[in-house]
Length: 246
Image (cartoon, rainbow, N blue to C red; front, side, top):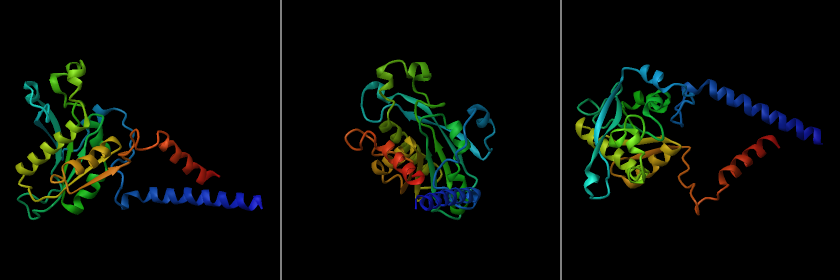
């Protein structure tokens, strides 16, 4: 009896592995639900230099503090964003309602993100979409106060380093882009993974007039104290392994 159960479990395991390989082999024929390809980023500077010429870099004169009215709140910094116009059919083009896919940068420089984000480019041609990538404040080349050293100097300068300020940065840049490229009627889909996915979900909730939808991949949007059990993640992972291997 135990031998039959063990044989069945091994057959189930082998079938699962083969199915995974088949899906992996055919991954280029179906849309990716995760925004990343899984590429391991080894050297952001090298990857940045090899990015397609279809990606154009711009800087927006961003407000330091969106929520207060102190004199320093009106300070600005240069926030980097990148646009790919290759597939764009909107604006003054034939498809005035072509969408805008927007990748919301997370806790790293935008250089590495552009090289590994596959979802946007994989689906842009089908929808004639404009692709926009926005760097998170305090990362990459989007550093307030002129330098990283100054930006991270003390609690006062670090006080502007939070997700509420970040998603408002994104809203300002998106509204500016829609106005600049005559894309007022183009629906916006914001996209992110992990922390960036959390930002995408919160962006849709906070600024529904700026985004029609959000793709939040692997985003622990409820993983906070007093909402989700502290060991919730580990319980789910343990349960998955128990189902597969026992």
